[in-house]
Amino acid sequence: MTLRKFAGLGALLSIVMPGLAMAADEVAAPVLNSGDTAWMLTSTALVLFMTIPGLALFYGGMVRSKNILSVLMQCFAITGLISILWVIYGYSIAFDTTGMEQGVVNFNSFFGGMGKAFLAGVTPSSITGPAALFPEAVFITFQMTFAIITPALIVGAFAERMKFSAMLIFMGIWFTLVYAPIAHMVWSGNGGLMWDWGVLDFAGGTVVHINAGVAGLIACLVLGKRKGFPTTPMAPHNLGYTLMGAAMLWVGWFGFNAGSAAAANGTAGMAMLVTQIATAAAALGWMFAEWVTHGKPSALGIASGVVAGLVAITPAAGTVGPMGALVIGLAAGVVCFFCATTLKRKLGYDDSLDAFGVHGIGGILGAILTGVFAAPALGGFGTVTDIGAQVWIQCKGVGFTVIYTAIVTYVILKVLDAVMGLRVTEEEESVGLDLAQHNERGYNL
Image (cartoon, rainbow, N blue to C red; front, top):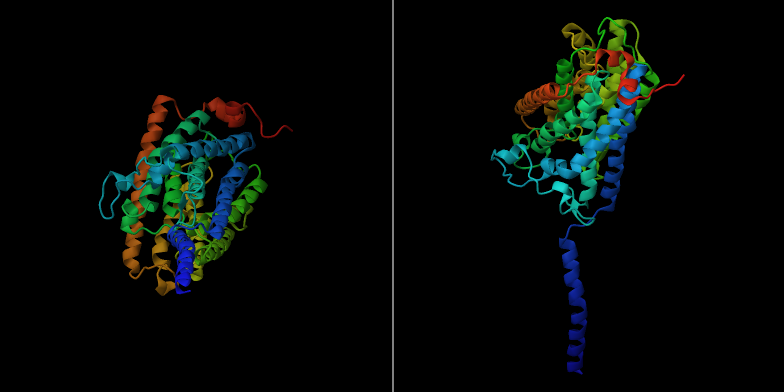
């Protein structure tokens, strides 16, 4: 009887032990989190929605009627071009960590390896995230949408005067030499130049907005002013489109900021809250500043204020609290209003749709104020204990990005201008880019 008991126990163990071993393996292996995956899928769609149709309509409404299709076309073409370049090598340049070592400055501190070129090794089962909780394919697509909107933002600075062919080549080279390396330096992890400095950029204040804003400023300076600027009236032809585009940007930005938490968690929830607070505050700040200065509030003004608030809160969204967001938003609305109007008028540059005035200035302001309001002492949720030291780090990140982007963008544009020319002819500019570049009209009335 005793032998039979031991035999039965042995048989039971032979059945149970493999199951226990398999369970242990499952615990040790990364486990896909369906909630995080669903949120990242949603966020990805929201960020793409920001470019097409959001940014396309926002910019399209602000140009003259003879150029609306050119702006929409540029946004759509950039979306296609950057998507393909991201797959071929952009993702690898930005996020491959080959050769990186924390505290060691080398080539890979600036430029990622090519181990992920053509998305090598990416399968339906490859997982990524802070704790490997959602598919790498989703992360790739999410980051692709950031790479798409950044060069599209530059369009606002040179609208109505750049050749479509030159624009395409410029955007491809700029993405390769400016966007992807800056993204790598800030977001790739230990060994990335600005990551090691301790620069706080939750969702792209440096990578996206300062980068695009400065590139836009250089582009409008190199191309020169539009024919007739500033004496000829160049009023927006359809502010209804612009307001609809701004509304789409506002909604899509929740994916941009809250999605950058890379999880459906408390950080995402707080990022969503502070995004709404800062945007509302900036819209009102711009509106009242314009009301006091010019006597009347405008629809274009409040739409611009919305975008300024969205831009400024972007680097801070994961670390500041509600009251910090309120201050950042108000500051962005007022400061960007004066920079987009007074500063541009005094200096005389033709930033057609205020790409630098809103994205460049708003990004710089938000990046620096992140160093202040990320401190727990001021209601933030970061690890900042020395505000002065963190502000200095933020300023270093801003300064490096401004200088690097300005120099490389200038060189790219000057070379392209010498090789193929950047501007359309005066006759084409007078006719409008819709007909001159695409043989179409936005309106057949």
